[in-house]
Length: 597
Image (cartoon, rainbow, N blue to C red):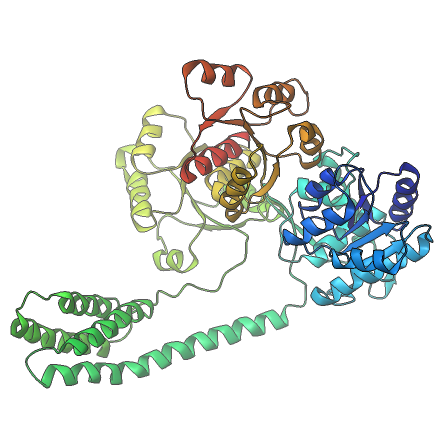
């Protein structure tokens, strides 16, 4: 668990930090209220320890601003003021607890545990389990089949992180943010080694199942627990419920068609109220029939709906056509359902890659490496393509081998057929030879990638990740520096729905500290700001060996040649002109993230 300590007294902060770290907490320390507010709003802390009297922004004002912004992180206030009035003021400001100085550190720890425990009770059971593995956060104990497993503080923390968030994928940078302190600078390799060490200890304790799975190019996630009986039961119940819905819909059709028939034999024109009701019913039937497999019936219902929109005055002709369409609809519904457009139950986040090729050393190597990459692989022959199976399982990527001669055009014809049947699914072509004419033919036929079969598995999975780029931007970090708070809020509202982690900063003199703490994937800088302008900050980044490759986009209202030349001369990768448009900002930010990867 990670705690934010906002305290300007170096001796008190060192005492508290040392004690917390010894009790397996990760601590971020800041010494003033303004920076504390920025860190707290990042929302990555289990608890905030807040001194009342701190520089720039006092603790009470900071607490008020956090609660006003919707921050629900538990807050314990620390202060030398102990009157009833002071305590009431602190609690009214939004604090959850109030500790007066001098305090006993053990008592402070107890209050921290109690407050975190109360928060956790709302969301988690007191003991976290995964199969026979048990994690007790109160006793700080991990057991497997009742055998205690001794873990390091970091191993303990990462295990807790995954158990508390079983569905979430954590990138290596996410894990660094949550487990390491601000003044530590671990590489992503440290996360890889930490997970290896945890896996090794769990295996030594007798655990045969893999606890943490690798999601290729994204990070890690807790695997489903070995006991999946309940999940299978729920899936079965879901299928049964689905079948029941289909049957109920089928039974309802008879009465619904009868209602339409009554109108068709009850006169020779529509009343205004009938027209509205019939149009609504035809619209509902068009959607329902299509979903449950009556594709032709759905088309007939759409014709009825369009007919009822016709108010040209040809009432009698339209009424006759309406009666004919009702008869046609009855005939279509009386036939068997050909197919169901209902998708099968989700297979989870692991992408499905279908390889259309012979089983050979190239495809075998990909299939063997796929589980470690968090990918499912299916190899099918191109002699008989199981089109219905492909429709039901909807692969995320198709890899097609062009091992046949191009003079026969069979491989390219199959590529064109795949793109016609599945226009939204990327198709990567694999081939034994590298030929420009073949590359052009693949592009013309709709292929999204060209891979030589001499490529390594890492190169193959890299190509797969590139065509899955809409997923790869998830949880990417964007840092925005601008002195206009309204502009910052606008960009945050625009980018966050795309599952981007957005950090905003309005004071450019805090730039370096926030940059090195958040480690963003892309940086947006306003050109004109007080203290330091965007060009100066851009040059600062380009001079640093660690961050000099960070993508930078400058936002400016000046689009004259001289200003743009200065932007690129300072080292920016791109610029956005004000006033901004939603689509342009998204496109440029996502483009920079994808290019950097």
